[in-house]
Image (cartoon, rainbow, N blue to C red; front, side, top):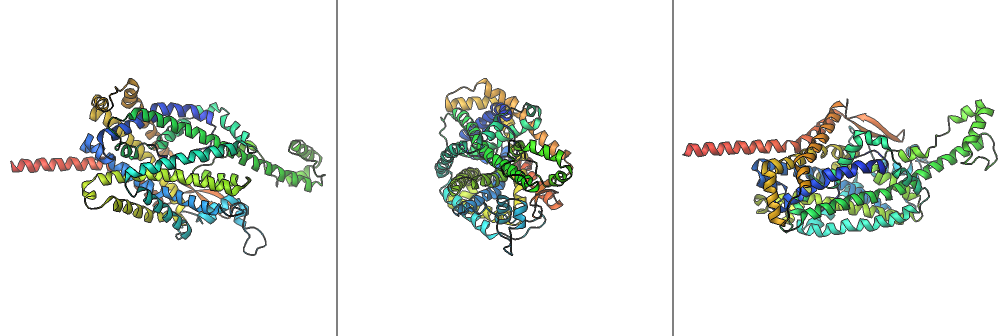
Amino acid sequence: MFTPRAAPQQQSQSLSSFLVPYLIMLIVEGMPLLYLELAVGQRMRQGSIGAWRTISPYLSGVGVASVVVSFFLSMYYNVINAWGFWYLFHSFQDPLPWSVCPLNGNRTGYDEECEAASSTQYFWYRKTLNISPSIQENGVVQWEPALCLILAWLLVYLCILRGTESTGKVVYFTASLPYCVLFIYLIRGLTLHGATNGLAYMFTPKMEQLANPKAWINAATQIFFSLGLGFGSLIAFASYNEPSNNCQKHAIIVSLINSSTSIFASIVTFSIYGFKATFNYETCLNKVILLLTNSFDLEDGFVTASNLEQVKGYLASAYPSKYSEVFLQMKNCSLESELSTAVQGTGLAFIVYSEAIKNMEVSQLWSVLYFFMLLMLGMGSMLGNTAAILTPLTDSKVISSRLPKEAISGLLCLVSCAIGMVFTMESGNYWFDIFNDYAATLSLLLIVLVETLAVCYLYGLRRFESDLKAMTGRTLNWYWKIMWAGVSPLLIISLFVFYLSDYILSEALQYQAWDASQGQLVTKNYPPHALAVIGLLVASSIMCIPLVALGMFIMRRLRRADTASVA
C-alpha cells in the first residue's frame, strides 16, 4: 500500500526537463525497489525488524534503523497536520485572516512587518509560527499550534486504535478523497487568469537542466521518498498480504499511479502558480504605471502595460534627472522571475497556495477544500508511518505479551506528541527544517542499499526467486534481476556519495531565518548545538545497522564460549 512521504526540498523547474530523468529513475530505481520491499514483507510475514532478522540475524539492525527513521518522521511530520488544522479553522473567516495586513498598535496604519513582507507571509511567520529571529532563541511553546498538534495526534490514535489491519481501511479513504479535491482544483485552476502562463512555464523545455547532475539527483530522490522506500511501512503492510498475492503487479500499478498523480498534481499546482505569478506581475506593473503617472503628471490611461517600456524610454531621454530619481522607486516587474521563484517545502503549501486562494472568488470555499485535502494527505502519510513503527513492536513477543495493541499505539502517539511540542516553540520551524532535511535522507539511502545487497548476495537472488515462484507461481524475469543485482545498488551508491560530498564540500551548514525588520528570510550558519543534533539524527539511525550486527556477533561468540566451557 502506498503512502506519500515528505520529499526533500527542491528548486522550481519546468516539468518537461524534469520528466525525462524522473521517468528513467522510476524504471531503474522506483519500481524495482518497491517490488523488492513488497516481496520481502509478503515472504517473511513480519514487520521490518522480524523480516530482516529472518534473512539473517545480523540484519536485525536494518529493521531497527527503519523504525528509528520512521519514529523521527512521526515526531515532526504530524506538525504539518497541526498547521493544516490551524489554517482550516481560520478558513471559515470572512475575509480570510491572511488576505489583509493587521493594523499597528496605534491603529494609524498597517503593521510594519506585514507591510515589509506580505499578508500571507505575515500570517505564516508571525501568526502561525510566531517565529524567533534565530534557532538560538527558543522562545516558548505556542499554545494554539500545540492544541492543533494534540488534535492531530488524537486523530491518528483513533485511526490506528485497532492496529495495522484497520489502518489500511482508513488509508483507502485518506488516499482517494484528495483525488476528488485535486480534480475540482484542476477545473478551477484552468479557468483562472494567468493559468496558461504557469502551464507554459511548466512544459517549456529547459534542456540545459538535463546536463545538471542535481536534476537527476532530485528526480531520483523524489521517486525514493514519494514511494516510501526504506521506512518499513511497505514491508509492514505487505506482511498482511496473502502469500499468493501478485505483489509484482501491485508494485507496477502503484508506481505508475504515484507518478501519474505527481504529474497531475503538478498541472494543478502550476496553473494556480501561474495565476499567482500573473497577479503579482500585473500588480507590480500597475504600481509602476501609477508612480510614473503621478511623478510626471501624465494623463490617466496614457501609460498602459503594452506601452510601458516605450514611455519609460521616452521619459528617460526627455527628463533624465527626474527619471533617475523616480527610477530608484520603481520595481523591476518580470513575469519570468515571478514564475521561476524557487518555492519549496512548507512555503509552497502554506504561503503560495494561501496567497493564490485569497485572490479567488469565494476564497473561503477554496481554502476549506485545499486545507482539508492537505490534512487527508498528511494523515495518510502518518498512518503509513505509524504502521511501520507499530508492526515490529506488536510482532515482538516481549512487548505484545505485556501490553495490548491499544496501549502500544497510545504510548507511541503520546511520546511522539510530547517530543513534537518542540516544533510548536518560537524556534520550532527551524528544528522542523533540521528534521526534514537530515533525519531521513542519508539513512534511507543506506537502509535500502543494505536491503538490496542482503537479498541479492546474502539471502541469494536465486533462492529469493524460487521463494517468489513458490508464493505467486510466477517466474522472476530478467528486468528485476538486473535492477536488483546491479543497477539499483549502483544508483543508490551514487546518490549516497553525492550527498556526502555535498555536505563535506559545503563550508558550513546554513538555514533560512526570518528577519522581521526586513520582512524576508536571511541566511545564517547553524550554531554548534544544532550541528550536534544534525550529527545525532544521521548517526542514530545509520549506526543501528553495524552496532546491532556487532552485538549479535559478540552474543554468538559468548554463547559458543559458554557451550565450549560446559562441554
